[in-house]
Image (tube, rainbow, N blue to C red; front, side, top):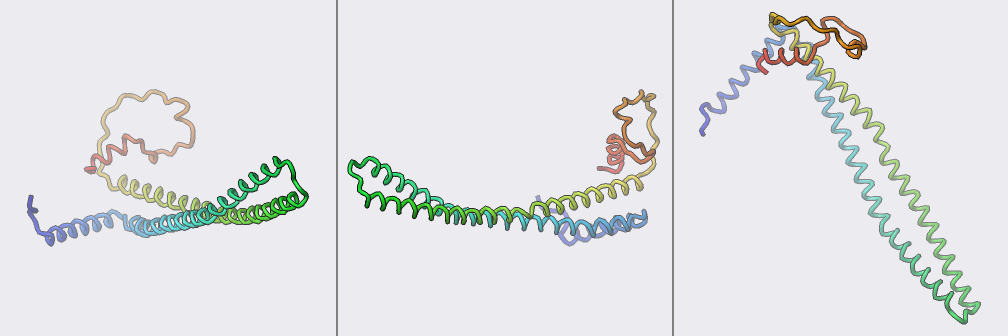
Length: 208
């Protein structure tokens, strides 16, 4: 199906609609709210991008540390198996000389030294992994800030819809029954709290 209007005409009409909406919002006194939203959304985007970069950097660092540590772990494990086999053969030998015993003790001492060095190196690797995750505290603060920005923006837009909505005559409704005690808990602010049904009716009246 071919479009009925050209791209230039579509952009022109879109620009006219945008300008009309902008002028209408300013006439309603919504300029400051829009400026706040426009200034906070890019900030929230940058904050989330920063968290994404920190997460990616930490993940890459952990993967690199693991790639380096795995071959070293396999080497120590292989040497341990070889030493265990040698000790079993020596224990089953009927004629074990002092020289063979001393040679085996030297092998055991060498393996113990390598195992100690390996453990010390892995201790450093574990420390590096733990440090690479230290961004979690900072990222949690950033995400909380972004949530605050989104929540505040949502409230500002909802207030704008409420303030600019046309007046409607409320439909006659039966007398409400006494509210349960659980619904009476917490502070009550007259004319400020909107129920979900009221919000839905408001959005429907605006064509949403």
